[in-house]
Image (cartoon, rainbow, N blue to C red; front, side, top):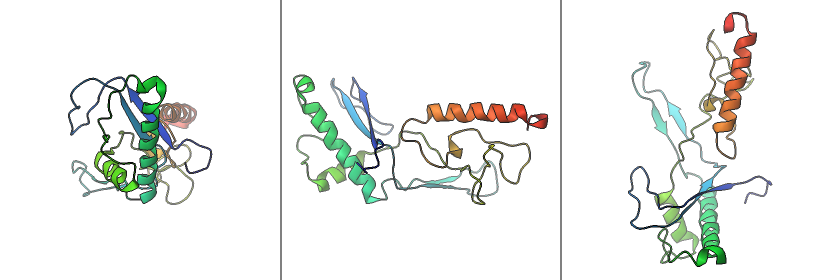
Length: 188
């Protein structure tokens, strides 16, 4: 959608009707076809509440703060609708439950739906960015700047979110960390 040749959307397709953490599934049987935005422009932040390790941090998601994020998810809903109307699925699908056939194709109605139903897919990343500049938390060998003997080896060091699931890149980060630790004197 953004024209750079890389995927902007991924679809989670499940042969059942799913709910969410705060919503029960709708009754009946069906298929869930959920567009997932892979390159949001909105950026959240995590902030320490205090210097006490047992105080939970503040999370500021800033989800869908940028209108282009909403527009991309609207495009995803429109694509999902087209897929469900394709001949191979149309003969199996009786009706659309969400956003529902009564929700028009106009951007206003679909934007309201997206803002109401969009959620995270629980793959937070990028809170301890890796890099060589002064703003990076870890260096290219995953060592925490200003501390000795501590590395970070998870998705939090990703300077840019991958356009897809974070599992494989996180495994790669962990394997690199193991190599760095094995090569370093004293294993640090």
